[in-house]
Length: 144
Image 1 (cartoon, rainbow, N blue to C red):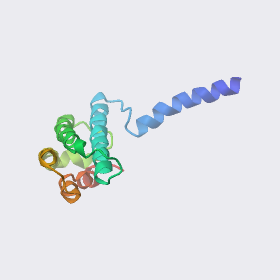
Image 2 (cartoon, rainbow, N blue to C red):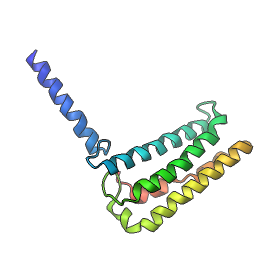
Image 3 (cartoon, rainbow, N blue to C red):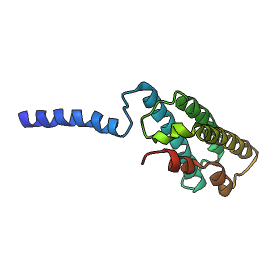
Protein backbone atom coordinates (compact mmCIF):
# COMPACT_ATOMS: atom_id res chain seq x y z
CA UNK A 1 0.00 0.00 0.00
CA UNK A 2 2.81 2.42 0.85
CA UNK A 3 4.33 1.81 -2.58
CA UNK A 4 1.08 2.91 -4.27
CA UNK A 5 0.92 6.05 -2.16
CA UNK A 6 4.49 6.96 -3.17
CA UNK A 7 3.71 6.32 -6.86
CA UNK A 8 0.57 8.43 -6.61
CA UNK A 9 2.52 11.26 -4.94
CA UNK A 10 5.19 11.17 -7.64
CA UNK A 11 2.51 11.22 -10.34
CA UNK A 12 0.82 14.22 -8.72
CA UNK A 13 4.10 16.11 -8.70
CA UNK A 14 5.03 15.11 -12.24
CA UNK A 15 1.83 16.34 -13.91
CA UNK A 16 2.21 20.02 -12.95
CA UNK A 17 5.93 19.94 -13.73
CA UNK A 18 5.39 18.50 -17.20
CA UNK A 19 2.57 20.96 -17.90
CA UNK A 20 4.77 23.85 -16.76
CA UNK A 21 7.57 22.65 -19.05
CA UNK A 22 5.12 22.72 -21.96
CA UNK A 23 3.97 26.22 -21.10
CA UNK A 24 0.54 25.05 -19.95
CA UNK A 25 0.91 26.20 -16.34
CA UNK A 26 3.34 29.04 -16.71
CA UNK A 27 4.28 30.72 -13.46
CA UNK A 28 3.64 34.13 -14.94
CA UNK A 29 -0.13 34.74 -15.31
CA UNK A 30 0.41 36.95 -18.39
CA UNK A 31 2.24 34.13 -20.16
CA UNK A 32 -0.34 31.57 -19.02
CA UNK A 33 -3.13 33.76 -20.42
CA UNK A 34 -1.29 34.17 -23.73
CA UNK A 35 -0.78 30.40 -23.99
CA UNK A 36 -4.51 29.82 -23.52
CA UNK A 37 -5.42 32.44 -26.14
CA UNK A 38 -3.07 30.81 -28.65
CA UNK A 39 -4.53 27.37 -27.85
CA UNK A 40 -8.01 28.70 -28.63
CA UNK A 41 -6.76 29.97 -32.01
CA UNK A 42 -5.32 26.53 -32.69
CA UNK A 43 -8.58 24.85 -31.76
CA UNK A 44 -10.55 27.05 -34.16
CA UNK A 45 -8.03 26.48 -36.96
CA UNK A 46 -8.18 22.71 -36.39
CA UNK A 47 -11.99 22.77 -36.54
CA UNK A 48 -11.87 24.72 -39.81
CA UNK A 49 -9.33 22.26 -41.18
CA UNK A 50 -11.60 19.33 -40.37
CA UNK A 51 -14.48 21.03 -42.19
CA UNK A 52 -12.41 21.94 -45.24
CA UNK A 53 -11.00 18.39 -45.45
CA UNK A 54 -14.59 17.07 -45.35
CA UNK A 55 -13.89 15.07 -42.19
CA UNK A 56 -16.99 16.62 -40.61
CA UNK A 57 -20.16 17.97 -42.29
CA UNK A 58 -20.32 21.41 -40.70
CA UNK A 59 -19.83 23.76 -43.65
CA UNK A 60 -22.45 26.07 -42.11
CA UNK A 61 -19.96 26.74 -39.26
CA UNK A 62 -17.10 28.01 -41.44
CA UNK A 63 -18.12 31.63 -40.88
CA UNK A 64 -18.38 31.08 -37.12
CA UNK A 65 -14.90 29.55 -36.89
CA UNK A 66 -13.44 32.28 -39.09
CA UNK A 67 -15.06 34.94 -36.88
CA UNK A 68 -13.60 33.22 -33.81
CA UNK A 69 -10.14 33.28 -35.43
CA UNK A 70 -10.55 36.95 -36.25
CA UNK A 71 -11.49 37.67 -32.64
CA UNK A 72 -8.71 35.38 -31.40
CA UNK A 73 -6.13 37.26 -33.47
CA UNK A 74 -7.19 40.49 -31.75
CA UNK A 75 -7.07 38.77 -28.36
CA UNK A 76 -3.61 37.37 -29.12
CA UNK A 77 -2.29 40.76 -30.18
CA UNK A 78 -3.43 42.20 -26.84
CA UNK A 79 -2.03 39.18 -24.98
CA UNK A 80 1.41 39.74 -26.52
CA UNK A 81 1.45 43.52 -26.00
CA UNK A 82 2.91 43.35 -22.47
CA UNK A 83 5.97 41.81 -24.18
CA UNK A 84 6.41 39.32 -21.38
CA UNK A 85 8.90 36.59 -22.38
CA UNK A 86 7.99 32.97 -21.77
CA UNK A 87 5.78 30.20 -22.99
CA UNK A 88 6.58 29.03 -26.50
CA UNK A 89 7.62 32.48 -27.74
CA UNK A 90 11.13 32.90 -29.08
CA UNK A 91 13.05 35.78 -27.52
CA UNK A 92 13.47 37.45 -30.93
CA UNK A 93 9.69 37.92 -31.16
CA UNK A 94 10.06 41.03 -29.01
CA UNK A 95 12.80 42.42 -31.27
CA UNK A 96 10.45 42.11 -34.27
CA UNK A 97 7.31 43.41 -32.60
CA UNK A 98 6.21 45.49 -35.60
CA UNK A 99 6.23 42.35 -37.77
CA UNK A 100 4.42 40.25 -35.15
CA UNK A 101 1.78 42.94 -34.65
CA UNK A 102 1.28 43.27 -38.41
CA UNK A 103 0.87 39.50 -38.74
CA UNK A 104 -1.84 39.37 -36.05
CA UNK A 105 -3.65 42.26 -37.74
CA UNK A 106 -3.39 40.52 -41.11
CA UNK A 107 -4.77 37.30 -39.60
CA UNK A 108 -7.66 39.26 -38.11
CA UNK A 109 -8.48 40.85 -41.47
CA UNK A 110 -8.07 37.61 -43.44
CA UNK A 111 -10.27 35.62 -41.07
CA UNK A 112 -12.93 38.36 -41.12
CA UNK A 113 -12.86 38.24 -44.93
CA UNK A 114 -13.23 34.44 -44.91
CA UNK A 115 -16.22 34.80 -42.57
CA UNK A 116 -17.86 37.25 -45.00
CA UNK A 117 -17.19 34.92 -47.94
CA UNK A 118 -18.59 31.94 -46.04
CA UNK A 119 -21.79 33.83 -45.25
CA UNK A 120 -22.21 34.58 -48.97
CA UNK A 121 -21.51 31.06 -50.22
CA UNK A 122 -18.96 28.27 -50.42
CA UNK A 123 -15.34 29.00 -49.57
CA UNK A 124 -12.58 27.53 -51.70
CA UNK A 125 -10.15 25.58 -49.49
CA UNK A 126 -7.21 27.16 -51.34
CA UNK A 127 -8.51 30.63 -50.45
CA UNK A 128 -8.78 29.60 -46.83
CA UNK A 129 -5.26 28.14 -46.75
CA UNK A 130 -3.80 31.23 -48.37
CA UNK A 131 -5.55 33.53 -45.92
CA UNK A 132 -4.82 31.75 -42.65
CA UNK A 133 -1.07 31.41 -42.49
CA UNK A 134 -0.40 30.50 -38.84
CA UNK A 135 2.63 28.41 -39.75
CA UNK A 136 4.57 31.30 -41.25
CA UNK A 137 4.48 33.16 -37.93
CA UNK A 138 5.10 30.06 -35.84
CA UNK A 139 8.14 29.13 -37.90
CA UNK A 140 9.69 32.50 -37.06
CA UNK A 141 8.55 33.20 -33.53
CA UNK A 142 7.56 29.96 -31.82
CA UNK A 143 9.85 27.53 -29.99
CA UNK A 144 9.19 23.97 -31.05
